[in-house]
Image (cartoon, rainbow, N blue to C red; front, side):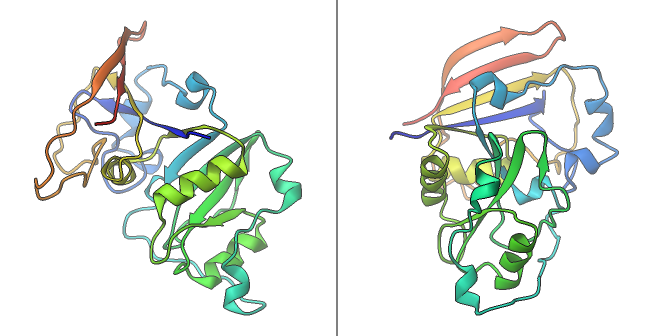
Length: 239
């Protein structure tokens, strides 16, 4: 089954998706943008996707430390995929979060019909994996020292029988997906607002930090002016 990956973000006119390293929904400086009256696009609904991809930075600050639980067995027991059937069967939509450093403390791992699934590596703390199991948060192990995105996406497609994943992650994960050649489409909702802070996170970060790689060229698929004054742009990716 061929897997299609769409990155989808809402951004200001100067390309910012948050005000700082603090998740945007926790940052008072980003609140005026959230409260400006725009109808933010639900990109998963737009594409009819049952699996969305997020990075841990969407939930905790970049400098947040790891979390450890209490081990009740050997470490190797925890380094296998954890997919409790009663959880998998119950939910229709999934938010897969890349978190090889084990930083997000999932106090509320589901909302409505959407449940969290963690993407971890074999180097992820066994204590964190025990923490996830204690809270019945499913996880997939993909990669050694960090999450292998290609493998993780393929495992997501197989686990949930889908050929489409929509990434609503931040710039770091978006850049990694682009760098790995895994992006098929880039969607952007552009708000007619300017943040004006050069330190604020942008849509794509780390794609070519040393300018060794040529700019990534996209092909416009669709442009749509929305009633709230924002613009939807859809681009085909791939070289």
